[in-house]
Image (cartoon, rainbow, N blue to C red; front, side, top):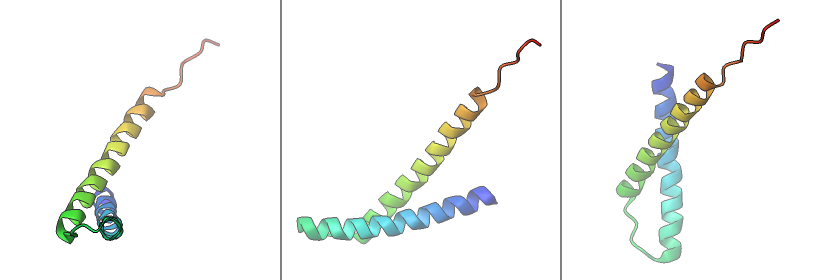
Length: 71
């Protein structure tokens, strides 16, 4: 349940930040602004990024095991 809640929060915030950046960028470049496309792309990008970072972090923690020393 913790994983699901974390991913929902990331998707919502990625959607919000994507909308803000998309609006500012489209206004500055005088291009059309499609809020659905911008929101979905940024939400999917945030979801992929947060899970990719998590997978990379888990593998690095598994490989960094202490070395046994002879006493």
